[in-house]
Length: 87
Image (cartoon, rainbow, N blue to C red; front, side):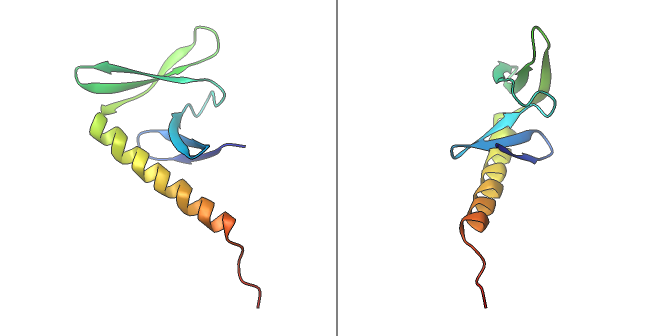
């Protein structure tokens, strides 16, 4: 099962140590990227021809949110990997 985390710009998934945007509606569909006027455009390649916009942001915003998502997943992975002390 892939973990997800919602942040202001995107819903993020974490798989094999990598955080990436995920469509909150079509979780099994791929996400693609494009550039427009210096912004990053994130698109869900939905079922059939139902592609739709997930968001538009600057590269800096994307990188900052990806870093935040990665930190969240890493913290949770450490919590799960380390069992609580039994008294």
